[in-house]
Image 1 (cartoon, one colour):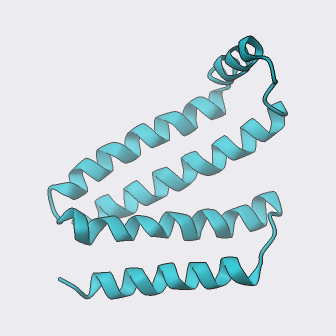
Image 2 (tube, one colour; image 1 turned 135 degrees about the vertical axis):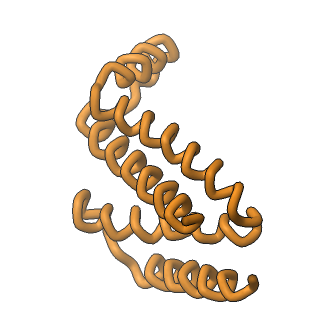
Length: 121
């Protein structure tokens, strides 16, 4: 059951990141003036999708707290790196972000690190 909590943390984290990127991109660039920056960012909070992304991060924290009751943090935390992998994959397909050999090698190291760490129980 503990792995379900880790999976929930990862999935809600990834959803939150992707939805925030998608919606914030549609609002344009952050203004330069300090007052306009505050108003711009405050205005983002009223977008229902952005709000769902923020709620998703909150839900992910509940899953993480549950996971911490089942695993040592030194064991569970490396699994959170899967969120990097998933966000990368989805960002390529959804946002047409560029893929480079450096990014692929880095993701490969992340996956290898997760595998090695998972064997340390």
